[in-house]
Image 1 (spheres, helix red, strand yellow):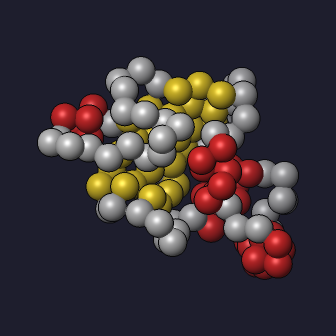
Image 2: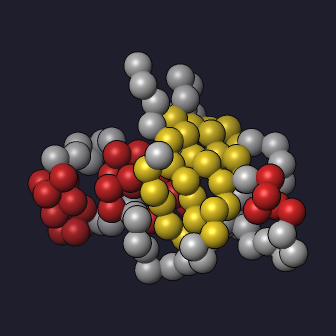
Image 3: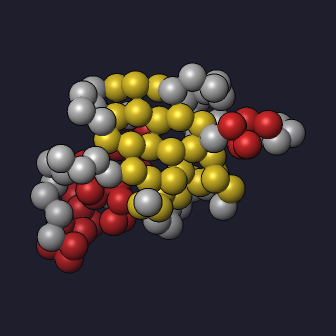
Length: 106
C-alpha cells in the first residue's frame, strides 16, 4: 500500500511533513523550520519539537481544516473523494485555507 504525504506550510514556509502510516498518521516539524528565529507552531496541540507526533486518527487540527456541510459535499463530488477519507479530503481541499496553514501533497 502506498501512503500519502503532505508538506505543511505556515505562512508559505515549509513547517513539516504529515504522512499516513501503517497505524495512522505522523507529523514531524522540519529541522530547518525549527531553527529559524521565532518559529510558529502549526497548532497549540502540535507544539514545536523535534520528535514526531504519532496518532491513529488524523490529528484534530488537520481534521478541523477540512470543509463541512454542503462544502464537504461539493469537495466529495468534485474530486470524487469519499467523506471517510479524511487525508484525501485534506489533500484536495486544503491547499489554500482561511488561516496561515496550508497543505500540499508530495
